[in-house]
Length: 561
Image 1: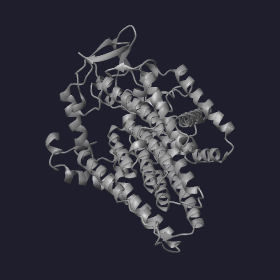
Image 2: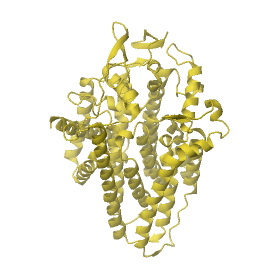
Image 3: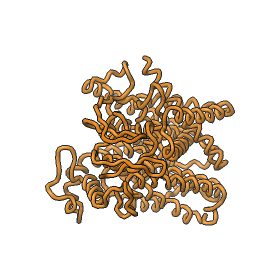
Image 4: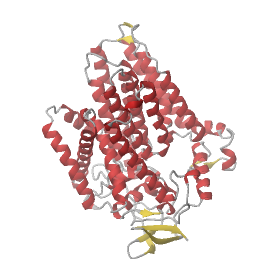
């Protein structure tokens, strides 16, 4: 029982603190961002805490005192806002949604990479200040994710590292809050039918497909953010002659892209949306106004620090892009190895190998000239891609048929032309398909969004009474939450039967006890090597034993012998 109390207390403590930072940050940079809802504040707060965590990691370990100070400040921001805010309905919705999604936070078995490097990478940040050259520990330590840095601030007494999986749960909760608020808002004018149906289908899709928090890793949260990015993009295209609101939307979309890219670097590509917006809306002169300059500066700082993490880990600004590996510092990963790993990731994404199988052709030849295509179809398409495709088609068809049943007459006065959106999605899809056609690298969204947008535009052609739109929206929200919980109950039951997970006894996920030995040390640092995966062994934990330990500026540096 004590474990459950600790788990719930800290879950809401960190939740309110994160929202508190979003509230304060939004009010400082824009009067329009200050009018957002708690879901947007949560995502902005998540972005800010991650940035603060990245910056402070260069100087101090994220131990109890550091983390307690950060989250008490955030909680104070939240409480001040709560006491001043007269409309308490949002807080009720937040609590109701958090309880409706709470089963998703209970995880026993995390994904395979969690034990390999996610847990130990984050724990290392909590126990040690930044170590230059950690990419030499193993290839898992070479890829930066803001999720690790956000999670490292959650290391506090009693809970310790048992909430290092909760970031994706918060992202899912904030997403649900944003969409629910949009769907239940009874607007009497300027009702955007297309974005309403887009939001409705999206929440069903996300809650049904992304229900398993333990499998989110560093990629599915970023894809949830992409759904929101295109929601804002669609809203922007429908706004006319309201440049102040447009600039606030652009600020928001820039923050979302930066946060998504800090989880998966491939999403830096989505910054192409911003010049398209300014060109489409003819807002070139407004780009450098005071509000935008503040946001641009913060985003610039975030990107610089994110790229610096990559560089100080590997010697490459965007690992494993060999072209970004410059100057060849002592801690750098050899360029030949970077090239091999780049080929390996592409080979894996194109279905060249996986648990228990590998295609009978060397990796460099396999990934060239569509040699990979047929095997990708057999191994990957008729598995995750096909399942996702059928799932999204079923969801869209179900929503369409229900709303079609309640139609009054065909609409003739509203026309939607989102050919630009389809073109942009096609370009992103082409880049994904040619270079890294794995669902975890953006496939869920790039396959789902065109179908969602098309289905939304088809439903929007029919006249439906607003009271019926509202009631049906509530019905589908509840249905998506029911499916989410049913799937999680089945998951928890499966974990109980296979792994012996006692849900009632403890809410904490499984961590294997690992023996480790000291392989290197100086007066400030000891480096450990595990007998198997690192898990939560003493940190820093390295799979490579052929290392040297030196000093670099005020930091410790690890290099190869």
